[in-house]
Length: 207
Image 1 (cartoon, rainbow, N blue to C red):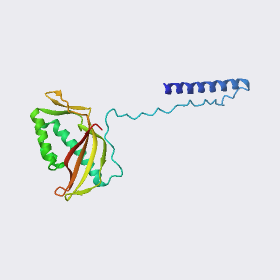
Image 2 (image 1 turned 45 degrees about the vertical axis):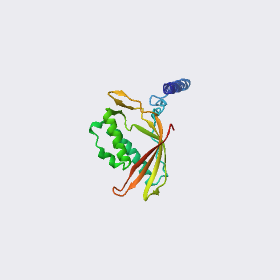
Image 3 (image 1 turned 30 degrees about the vertical axis):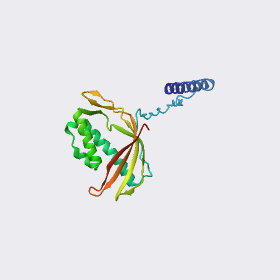
Image 4 (image 1 turned 90 degrees about the vertical axis):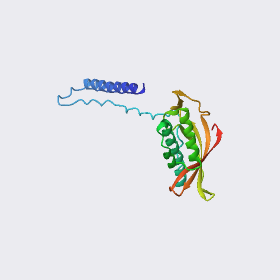
């Protein structure tokens, strides 16, 4: 009710000012017909600012501005993996496993294919928003060389996306703890000149 109240006060001030001019004019000589009586303009309050929408669910952790290009690429690889896995899980009957090769490498690629085949056998699918998990916090290690390969560890707390469910025969299924911490080993693959997930290790339940 703030804006209507301010408008009413502004109009009242304008009317009082106008009444004062009329009284003053009656106390002296009558004004000439050519003398205009100026009415003060009515103040118009500025429109109220539109509030920014407040997120109602988990929000992806912001990228750290101090990350190197390699660290940023590793974090984005994990994001692209979940985008790809979610899209495939939404239509497993027509899933193209080759898409996973853009974001994963062995041994994790083979493990992920077996996992998706298991979902197909159960008749499961993802119904809802993408991605099916959201990284609400994450740390990204510097580049290290391990067994002759460059690798980066992305450790993140990820939360199930409340905007969807895995379903079997139309019924949602329990996917376990809604918050978990995972360690993604992201390696540089010379053959494709890109960063890919080679291993995923669960660190803990909860964040």
